Length: 125
Picture 1: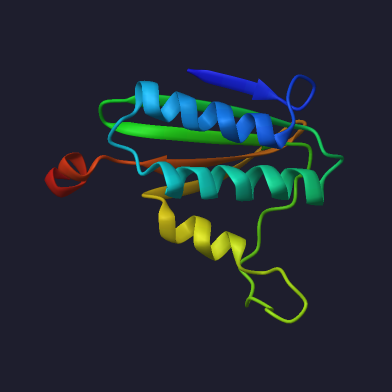
Picture 2 (picture 1 turned 120 degrees about the vertical axis):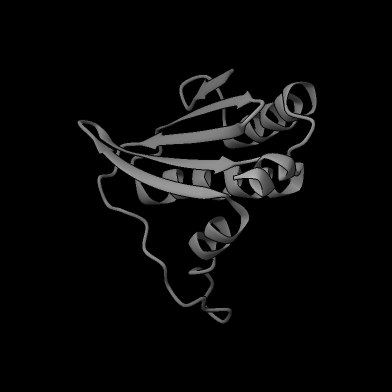
C-alpha cells in the first residue's frame, strides 16, 4: 500500500512514488493511464480546495484502487472541454481511463476512488 499526504509530499513526489509503486506492486497496470488519473485527481485537490490531499493506492490481484481525499465536499462535474481557456477535460478523461469511479462524501470533504481491473479479470467478469 502507498499512502502519501500533502503535509509530507508535493504532487510531483506523489506522482513519482505512484510510478515506483506500480512498477513494484502492480505490473499489469497501465502506468501512464494511472499516472494521468493520479495527476488529475491531485491537481483538482490542489486547485479546488485548500490544497490538502491524501493519496492511497492498493494493488491486489483483482484490482488496483487509487483514492484521493480532499477537503471539498463538491462533487466533480463533467464539463465540455474548453481548449481556448483551458479546463474541463480532466473528469471525462478520468472516467474513460478507469474501470470504475466513485465519489464519497465524508466529514472532512470527499474521496474519489478510481479502480482498474486487470484485463484477464475484466474479461471473466
